[in-house]
Length: 242
Image (cartoon, rainbow, N blue to C red; front, top):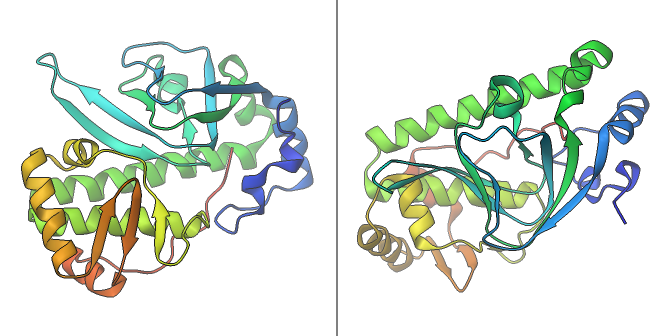
């Protein structure tokens, strides 16, 4: 059975802003159902015009673009609570692909009702705008990383951002969190070769800052890791959930 929005497990986490009673009623009407997909399943394809929008309820995935020569750029990772398909809702088609990394459960929304947000629920429409703005902010940080950070700084930046998100989602236990991705995914996100990524992860491990193996990311010294990455270790701001 689909999860009722009033019983959504994500809403109990401090990362997400609480719904008002009116927003909760709106979202219960807007939700069309749930979809479960296995690891490796494409959810949205670049150039497609999906009739649905999604929120990740459980599981993780990734967004990526593929060039004609087959090379891939990972745009970002998908965590529980992320809103998926906004690009197609606004622009008519997806500019990137979305794929499940683990088994995922997704809340499904009818895209044809998307503009109802702006007509009937201005607060929810603002939340969508906020999500789009924070995505733009993240892509700016990613571009700065690709263009200006060294490989060591870039990998430190990625691992620190991932870990902060894990802390906000309350999936960190004893300085460790599930991280069910491949080193190739991280390499494709940072514009590095797989060999360079592996060697750089080894440097962070040898310096006892961070280690990643068997689908588990462990951060041993967050302060030092953030110093290398040249970023703050402040907790992430609270965010809306669709």
